Image (cartoon, rainbow, N blue to C red; front, top):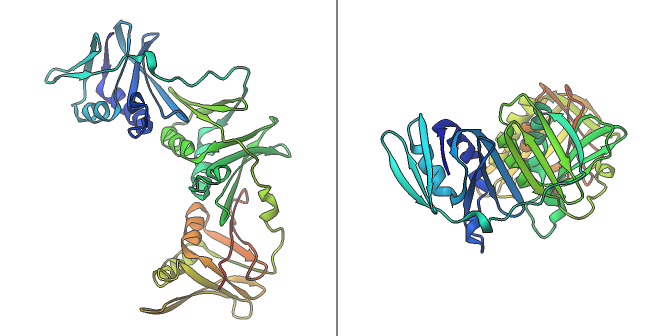
Length: 363
């Protein structure tokens, strides 16, 4: 293998790909990246057996070839080089990396044993604008669970219903749902949330559509010159739409920035009580107030004016409220609930296609 690439392209590709190389795996080769020449381009790939990322970059190929090299070393080394042209030359299993000022040799491992995700054949294909998918993921992905004992909840659920495509995530304490677009396809995919966090980084600021191909076991996302393949999570997603209330006995509409401010201040006094804050809605005064107590430090009450219907109070986790408000982009927000023990809903008044549900704490 002998070729030339630019430092900028190679460094960016390694940044996208190398992060999923698994240094703790029982298979040592999984801590490597696979370098391979393909049609006068260089393919850089890595996998942890559940996710695989491949990026193609333009190169001047003199001799074809393939090798795997340590991902961390390759990424750190290339990112440290000055911008310009890099020569890559493979001699047996030693990769010579050279520029005008640097000459290095990286010991590689033959690519014969490098695992490859099986190709998706006869899969369902569809596209989605990158900005729509990116915004949806930013609003949903954080609500997925980290608890590996309930694998279904560690995924992002893409599904079509009534001619629309939805994305949802829940950890059983909160739920985020985003309506993405209209679709004629029958879609039901449960994709690992960590794969979707990698996809978010890959999408970046691209304006191209994201091409998606999937079968019953895998899904492939193609963005520009990058491909991400992930194994789907097996199992049935809970019928979460039953958790989203249609009407509310108590609701309040107010500026998002004001609700965010009083929640943030109250959360400082809620650290002892696992983030527990009590939100009180008063129809007569047309106010929303938040109370929190730190037994050793003191207590706090903060309020804001709002358009209120009904009165009541509910105890929520302040971090979950702040996460929900961070995912809402409009100037004003409406939240509503039907009593202390039922789900509380947060909606963006400018974008009705997003809803965030938080389950109350027992006060």
